[in-house]
Image (tube, rainbow, N blue to C red; front, side, top):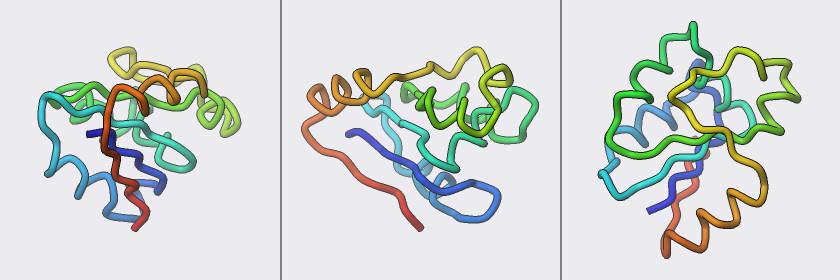
Amino acid sequence: MLHLVFRSPFTHAALADCLQQLTADDAVVLLEDAVTAALADGPWAAQLAACDAVVWVLDDDLVARGLGARCHPAIQRATWETLVELSTRHPTSHSWLS
């Protein structure tokens, strides 16, 4: 399954709820304010790097927030094309909005 997380983990439970549902076959994409979870010096990055699923962060959203240089090295950076590829590889997806 492809998990799309949109909300900041500092103000919403979306990412925490998502992490409880992950399997090794899943992929997670951090978008919009959820990109703050990818910060190398933040409290979420180590947890994301250690999870079984592959974790991506949308590069455009990271850069738009001035965080491009602060991304944890274990979190892969995705383009819009990457997001399309991931959508075709995973037949189901879930958008985490709350």
